[in-house]
Each structure stands twice: as C-alpha cells, then as structure tokens.
Image 1 (cartoon, rainbow, N blue to C red):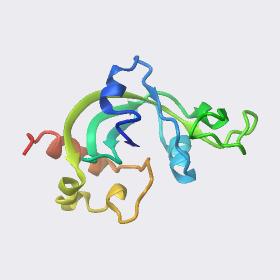
Image 2 (cartoon, one colour):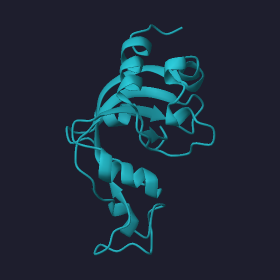
Image 3 (spheres, one colour):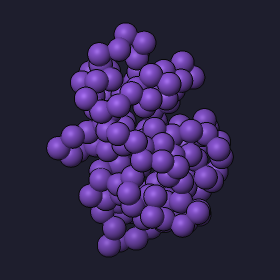
Length: 152
C-alpha cells in the first residue's frame, strides 16, 4: 500500500491508536476493488512511501478492518471529494491499516535487483496503483531476505 509520507508516513501510522489509520483517498476502481474483495483483517501490508525523495518499503502493517465508505468522498472541502458519490450509493471505500513496525527503507532499485521479485506489480512499468497485491512468495522473500539484511 503506497502513501505519500507528507500525508501519512509509517511514523504517523505507528503513532496512531490501536485502530490504525483509515486509508483514505483511493480513487482508482481497481485499487478500491482490492480493498473490497481481497483484503481481510489481519492481512499483512508492505507500507510503501511514494512521491518522495526516496520511495520504497518503509515498514510493515496489517489490515485492521473490513472495507467501508471513505468519508472524504462526501466532504466538499476534501481534495478527495466526489460529487457523484452519495452516502446512499458510495463509490469509494477504505480499510483501516495498523502499522506494526518501521523497517529500513527498501527502495525500488533494491527491489529490482532480485529476480524473485521480477513479477511484482509495483515494479511493472507504468504501474500507478496505490494498492497492489503481493504474492506469498514475494512477501516471504522481502521479509526473510531483504528486511533481515542490514542497510548498505
């Protein structure tokens, strides 16, 4: 799950209450559908910082709620306001995410160095989705090989 650190960083998420942080502002149907259809409470999350000087995996988190309507879609003062969405027929959903641990930053160049991760959706050319699934093999490789490694 990608977040711009000036909006919600891994540090912000770690400082949040036990309920976690609501993953607001997703305005892509495919990413919304991942939250709605595939994410379950307790699923692991690679917390990824994007649109910053050093993008990359910055921590581990977990899904802490089932999906529910994103309230920012109804707020005209929000940058995520959607005038076509109504409380009776919401278009956009979110899940709560609870940070578990800050890790060393694992940037895109490092992720690309590993053949075991070559099929990761986040590494595909042109991928702009803020939420992408990770296979069990990719998850285990990152946890056991990259996160266990000390910083360069």
